[in-house]
Length: 280
Image (cartoon, rainbow, N blue to C red; front, top):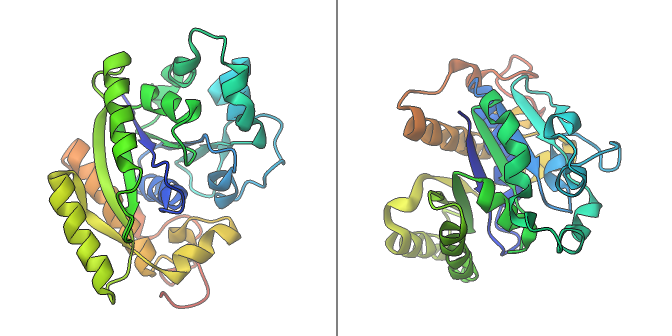
């Protein structure tokens, strides 16, 4: 059975969508059949995988509000094992439109159930808020992955997310786990990044992933080209970091290594990277 991981942090700008895109791509490149469900009305995970916003008739909004089958809205991507359920601006109105429904917190869980056996991993990109969309993701998920930027206010808002996780456990998803805390935008040149890293490891302990995502120019460029980093520049530090994260997650769940295909993904030019300029 596939593992559903919600990627959540109500603090914006922490690398949540970047993580959703690039972890999903790295898992897919390792022969893990992966689905990314975009629940953010900004639809940045959608455009970051090369699907132009507004170019599709139905989105996760139609799945949650109108009961469309999840498989009916899926898009293929450049990676053979990676599929996308796109988001749209209409998701902004989801809370209001579902407010009178008794099952409003379980809408995603009900539609993911029929497809869960078809995937190794289902990643849910949540909006930067603790609204009904994020609650739906947490109710449906086996675990939550929390990206935290290595900055001064790193823990801002995390306590609210952890309280929400506790509430979800009490209210109907008692087995919801913390997949891990992911340190993002780490700048090895600054004392602040190192201090924040130490503080977060002390605070969260073993829940912090060994992998750290660095601040990386190529990683920031990739979404504007509609490609995950391992197709844009596989030799970049950003690509290497997300490949390590995928290995870490796969090893934790299956106790086996990652497949060799991750070293030469679909779309690689044969020179070790999909982009034209050297890694950052």
